[in-house]
Length: 282
Length: 282
Image (cartoon, one colour):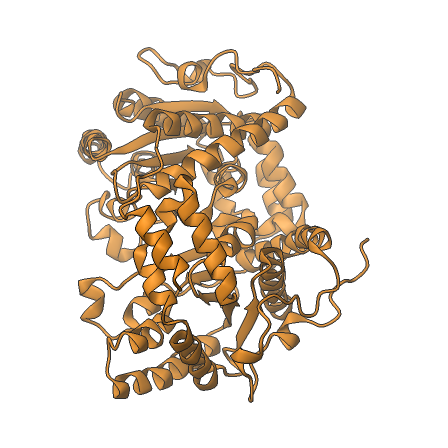
């Protein structure tokens, strides 16, 4: 057994509370975890086996209980959403995962309220849903590029809080994560994408356009946190300059949500002895 | 480097050709592979890294080319579809996988042609789609339980061939797999599900009902093979009493499909030097 390296739980230390200031977060930190990358990778494997076990129980009980988990991932480009999906979410049984990547809305989606397409992708009971980007784009890029007017953006914060409250009340545990990298780290990662032909497909000239508005984005995120971090749907800001730490911390947030649900193997809805006899006779 | 243990390719040795007889397949065999479980597990890891690389290229090029892969999984209960999804499909980046589990049709689905719900779940370009059960249920359980009359079942074989031909022509490589276990092996696996409280959720009394109609199912599969194994959408029968072999063989079928597509990193749609300068200036 490895000694316990989490000195403070991510649910506590990364939580966006009243008075939170994004500007005060060190994107290069590894809060709560005492150990280096090697320790982190060992812990990732250890937590994964717990997560896999709990996820199987959650899925097994999907017809008995309405519990589900929704992980919302938001971040500036290159912050590592894809790595979290691959190395954390990818570690559990794909049959119990519902992944939704929200791109630029389609013409049909734009004809509906911004939450219309989100509602359709909510996880069913027993599932871990993962949003790669989400309805928060509608108050981030939507605000900065003035895709909606101020009054509409204001309305959306409130609509989001109501929406998430309803989802939570229906049995879905919501975990909202912003992966937070520094501006310098983003530059290094974008540079790598430009330097390597096998990474060009991940690069888009608009990435630099958005990067030029870094401070506006940070301010928009700060407002998002102030307006939408609620007890039912809390935000966590995860320092992500160290990829290993970001993956480990998000995994632990998921693990904590599943432990709170405490899913149990459902009882048999049939008479086990009768079935044994029927089977034996075949 | 491990020596090459595939003496015959699964694409050749497991292919359903004219004159194929399901009754002649040894469900306990490991055709084409020279090695034991230990060798198989090493080969699974080796093939996985190739598969992951090719899958990333397929995904990267999704806006340039229309290629996709569709893996159809059919089997009697307990044959190991779930294990294939978890250990083969689960090994590639979830962002490039579209998994669809087809259960008993809903009332809405029943109001449409049997292919309606299938069409909606076909993989987009760049994706590996996986069907856990499929439209073949409509000519298997549908036939045996007389959910449709004979003429309708006849119509369906032809409709399936036409449907799959169109899908293939649009750029989706179709791999249809029946995981084949023996009747004795199924008994052992169902017995284990009844013996373990943490497996009860996987058991359903109807599993024994269906088991009692084993021979009818084998005959229905034989007809499916005769009517629907085409060059555009071939069937492969994978012996599955050895789980390690079934996973390894399905993985290799996927790998072969991706190698044939031979996906390439897409060329940059921007001027790399211009972008480097723009980025440097930020």
